[in-house]
Structures are given as C-alpha cells and as structure tokens.
Image (spheres, one colour):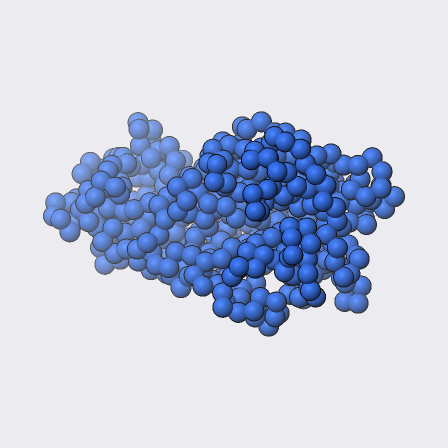
Length: 475
C-alpha cells in the first residue's frame, strides 16, 4: 500500500528515541475508545500511586480549572468532574485560563497553568497552585503565584520533570528580540514554583510546519526512555495545521546546553484526512493500567474547517492511544487513529521481530515497520456477523484484511456477501500458545491466517510449524 500511504496517510517521522528496546519485550495490547472526553483541550493525565488516574484540561470557557479521576483511563470518560479553582474577577489570573497540568511533588499536589489579566487578557503568564491533601479533589488549593522568568513576556504551558536528580521546568515564551510567537525554554527549579539560573532556549520555530499561521513552539511534554530524553511540543496555529514536533537529548547530556538537543526535521504527529483527525497536539504522556505501555494523550478535532478564530471553537477533545517504540528505541507515534476503538498490532509468534502489515495491498509479516499504521488493525465486529471479527486497517478505514484465492490482502469493503465472508474470521486462542490469537476463516472452515515466506495466506494447519505460523501476539 505504499502508493495509498503516500496519497492518504501521514506517516509518523522517526523521532530520536527511547522505550521498549526490542519487539520480543514489547508491551501487551491495550484498547481504548476515542474520543475520551469531549470539549477538553490540552489534556494532562497522570497515574498516581493511589491507583487513580487524574486528568485536567482546558475548558472551552477558559474560566476555571477542572479535575477528574478514575481507576482506569477509559473510566475518566464518565468520571465526575470537579472545579478546583476559578479565575479571579479582576487583576492577575482573571482571563484565558489555559493548559493546566497536575503533578505530585514531594508529597504535595501542584497545578501549573497559564492566565491573563482582566485589563489585558493577552498578558498571559504561568502560575502554580498547591494542595497538601492526599486526594487533590479534597482539601484546599493555595495560590503559589506567578512563575517568574527573566523575560516578563507572554509565557505559558509549564511542565516539570526530574532528570538525574534535578527538577526542571520547561515552558513556552515570547522573546521580542527574536519575534514570532513562542519558543521553548528550560530551567532547573529550586522549588515547585521557582526557577533558578539562566534559562536555556531549546527551540525556535523555523521549519515551515512550525510556522503556519503563527510561529509557534509550545506545549512541551517529556518522556524518558532508552537512555534518551524526548521532549514533544506543539507547532503552528491551533487549527488543522497544529502538530507535534520533537526534541531529543542523550540522558547523559547537559540538558541546559541547547546543543545537546536535536530537533526532528518533520512532525512526529499531524492531521490525518483518512481517519478524520485534525490538529492533534498539546500532548502529555501516561501509562497503561498494567504499567507496561506508554500512552499518548492529546487533543484534536474531528473536522478540518473552522469558522472564525480556532480559539473560539470549543470542540477540541481529549484522545488517547498507545505509543509504540521502534526496534532502535525511538518512539513511533503513528497517526491519530479513527474515532472508536483503538487499533492493535499483531506480532508473529515464531518470528517475534515481525508484524502483520500491508504493502501494496498485500498482507505480509515484516520487521521494523516504521510506518506504524501499516501494521495496525482494529479488531471489530465481523462483517459477516455470527460471532466473527474483522480486521480493519488503521490508516485506511473501510479496508479490511480478507482472503482472495487464499491469499491475504487488505482491500476496501465493496459491500458484497463474498467480501463480508472473506473478511470475517473466528477469533481463537493461539494455536501454538493460548496467550496469543489465531484467526480461522469464517467461510472456509479449517483455514487460518498464517504466514509462509513472509506472506499471509488462509491455509489449513496440521503441524507444529503450521500452528506457530498461524499464531500472533497482540500489542
């Protein structure tokens, strides 16, 4: 499907790297349903040691900070939401309450957020709230005030992380000497609301994809894996051009030295017309319920065209999907997947570095599938019903894995009874390992999806090798 990929899908560019080091140790599958929460932008989700996920995000009225919790990520969708703080009626912190993040630091909860003034709504600065309660939905929040930076200019999107024993603050800020809108900065912290020393400017928007509508680098988020520090950020205007870029530094480097960081030349995550996802950005990272998978949290819209200022459009919504990792340790964001259940990958049981993927419509197994979405499928209710399942392509919704002349292809559903039968399978316990899965053809009993010479077929199985070839592990 290389030609279709070029025409319809946006491939994730390879980042500069970190997490599960090899496919043989890849994390098991997770599945969620998107969107997670409607009308919540700039989402930030953390999993705490008390067993709860805590989520905060920008409300479209820009007037308050909200918080919800649940014991599962999907549970956040229906969790009750509390207002933990409201904007002031005058002066500082009275307008544009944006991008809250919640962090647990030294036994206390902290919320970082941006706000404008009542007399100048664009005089946006960064502020901090503190709560000493074990449950941040209880107790009281104390205003720790503004985070003071050497430049007293437009600043927002504070995030904090610890690296090699030092706590850092990363944020976005305007520098009048440079022009444009915002750049990315980093500084060590002396306490959760105070930076120290001279900040390092890590990134200025220069690439064409960082400067559409506005010259923007904002919304930094950090994940540390595989001996590297990755900092994603959002770029361009907050419409369909909004996208994620990424910086990478070695874990052994001096993070305050801008030369330690390498910027990806292309976005790592951007709009995708095929899946109807537009303007994905302002992300955070969390982990799955079993702690084995990294989860990408972000917002986007389900439509491209916006009437008026995108900031007045309330329909950015919180979404989640699994973050995968390439064999070289680099993160692979893939594409913003379609609404509904999230897709999974199918790894070969007996060739554990290889995954089912499509290539020019033909289904095969292959290693190092860096065009991640080619190797992702949604396991949905079977087109033929009767307790069957069908495997829908992640980057070409409406295309399904089907057998034709007993060869496996990824093709568009033409609505025929023949197609429905060819694209429907009974999901069985793995023939070689019950922890895996095998797929028996619904219309040709006894034939299973299996690989042979790296291509996929619907074939009978009888030997131990056959059974291994027809077994896959979900990731």
